[in-house]
Image 1 (cartoon, one colour):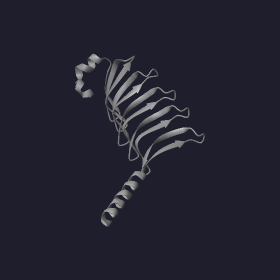
Image 2 (cartoon, rainbow, N blue to C red; image 1 turned 120 degrees about the vertical axis):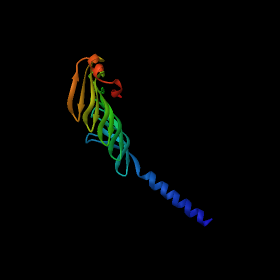
Image 3 (cartoon, helix red, strand yellow; image 1 turned 60 degrees about the horizontal axis):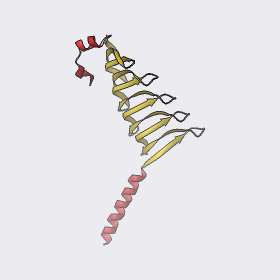
Image 4 (cartoon, one colour; image 1 turned 180 degrees about the vertical axis):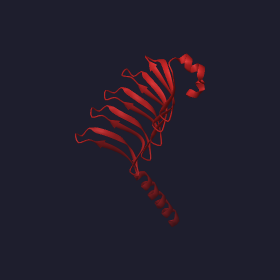
Length: 160
């Protein structure tokens, strides 16, 4: 019986230590406006975080992994409109990113890698595709001014 008590105490102590490391934190500016909130684990941002403008509107929101931006993020204007959204990998913008105009319609969407255009960039006007470009490491390689010319030279499966 004595042996069981020691084991339960050790397990209970381990569980308490593990849970005590992850806390929800809210950060305020000098005027007591909420500027960010989210989870901390071992003093690093983890999981989902929200960041705010002084007017209280969300500035950006997304996931952290060990203090580094990861997964999907959304960025907003100070009036609350969606400005851009996309994936982070190792703290850098990667994969497809969508960029919006003031009416929250897609203005362009681009494939990114390490914060640079790397792949295709599709340009829209009033939700209609009007042009496309191809980039490598931030440098423009080619531009198409019609979707028909783009389709004739590229496989649509490359847009995935």
